[in-house]
Image (cartoon, rainbow, N blue to C red; front, top):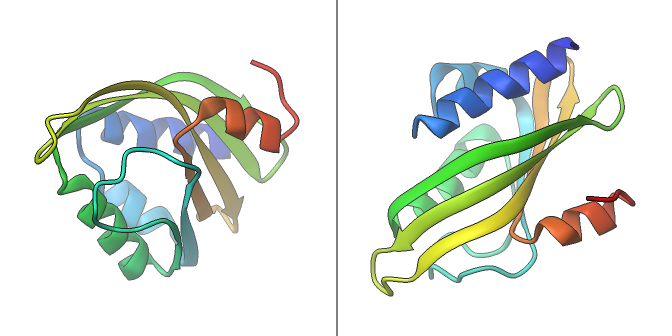
Length: 139
């Protein structure tokens, strides 16, 4: 198992416990980390779509997004090392919107791009199939 895979598994262990911004994620975020929300999904009215660069902006955007949910949880279904820098995690998001009451149980994906033993890009795909298609992969 690679060091990058070990790191991503550890980050996911924190996320699955609801610790989105734990010390591991903060210490392993590249100084120029890019946080990207890809594709259509429930519009929470906060955070917007697109990308944010830098740990503070990325974490603030993700925090804003999380604040729109009464509860939001993520689990990892499968880890795939794509190459020496990229790891794809097939995930499932479950939650309930604070304002809308929308119940969510959806297959998603998270793409980690590593550089210098840190997370350089974190791309959250609302649609798992889109992630697989964008990366020319199969389920």
